[in-house]
Image (cartoon, rainbow, N blue to C red; front, side, top):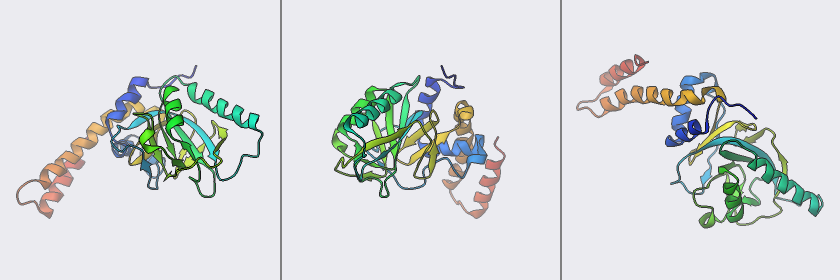
Length: 235
């Protein structure tokens, strides 16, 4: 069994903060990753009001623009293998499914049925550059963060599973920790998961000095300089 330097409770705790706040914390505890590891294009949330999701990545690729070219039994076996892979997890998961088509989103893998199935298999949601549909019938509480909303399945099929994928600029490997909400998604290195809460507290204290100063009577550039200096002194 894989050993992780964090617990399911640690991942659950990170759901209380939005993804931009997680990114802010990563700038403190993992500054070398400041320029990568997150999505960099606009995405659509099935339900923007849902809380963030955070779990172990279950990665795969799909296509939908054309038939798979495989036999029906092979397609079925691949779909079952995918479900088995998603189900085999010691903690809650976030599915990261890359659409390989030249125009991602031609056909939706994600809708009423697959949101319910994957939720039942322990996933909190999906991050994909592909499409979602059945927005009003998505499994309650299951989040979809997608590149496209589209009405049809087309010829959607699973191509591969468990490999490294790239979704709107974010590279994700099997078992990476992924945090996502309506802003997009970010990968959290395993070794800093438990450091995130303290980094968020530090960042909040630094920001508070500036925000409090902005609200004071007579705020001006000199007061801003003073606040910035005080913020830098907080460690």
